[in-house]
Length: 196
Image (cartoon, rainbow, N blue to C red):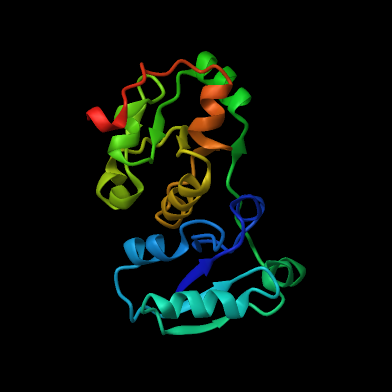
């Protein structure tokens, strides 16, 4: 079974069941479930915020995923209270990213769509669209690297997938490209997406 964590990305970053996949209910939930979980018969175990279990099950079934086995009673807090092992995602602010990028020149992976990347991106960033992340696994280094999207939702999905594949040396940039641009990080010249 896939352990699908549908809480907010900030909560997922602070703590989650090892190897669980994040796709938050408060983002583009159905399209990403459909894109990333190939088999609609895939058994799913849910980790939700308390009170949102039924909503998650209903929204999964609306897109054909009817094999939800159940959910973690009491949510992630019950997992922690039971002293079970959990994982975290190292997340930093765009200001920290700007400072660390200048000091360490670590690789940057932008998981936005190709059109978003071509429109404007962090200089020297790699484009590894979330939809095709599994095709790019060999490109991720075994040294620390940064990962971001437009606002933080897709990069957390990507972080969860990478961590489930044993790639743990990632650093997520909170707020994504919007926050990065606002922090004054050097980016490519803007190209209107309609001209691409």
